[in-house]
Image 1 (cartoon, rainbow, N blue to C red):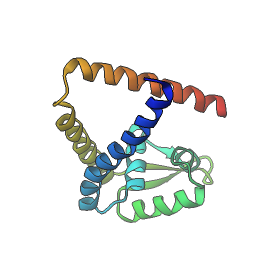
Image 2: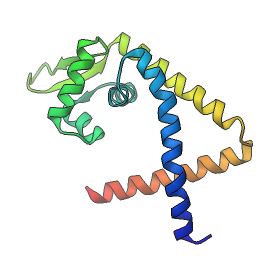
Image 3: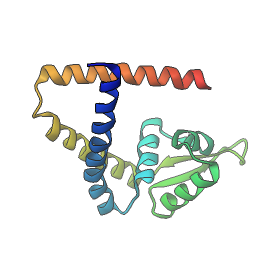
Image 4: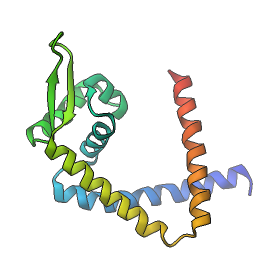
Length: 149
C-alpha cells in the first residue's frame, strides 16, 4: 500500500475511532457532570501532582484566560484547589482535591475498562504490534513538538 493510500485510509478510520471512544467516555463524564476539557485537566493534574496555570494552559493549548474559566468551574465543584506560593502570591498552582482525585481515578478506570473491552477481541501479538507502533508515533510527534519550540 502506498503512503498516500495509507494516509487516506487512516484519515477515514481515525475520526471514527476517536468519535466512538469519545462517545463512550462522554457517557461517564455526563454522569459526573464534567466536560471533556475539564476531564483532561483532572487527568493532567493527576499525572503531574499540580501545575501552574500557564503550564496547564500550554498543555490544553488554550489561553490562560480560557484556562481560568475551566479551573474556576472545577474549583467551584470541589475537584481542584488553588494553592498560592508562600514566597510569591502572584504564583498560583492548582492541584486536585480528594474529590478530584477520586473522580480522575474513576474515569481513568472507566477508560481502562473500555480499552480492555475493545482490545480483548484482538490477539496479544496484534496488541503488542499496535502498542509498539503507537509508541513510535508518539515519539515522533513529541520530537516534532520539541523542535517547534
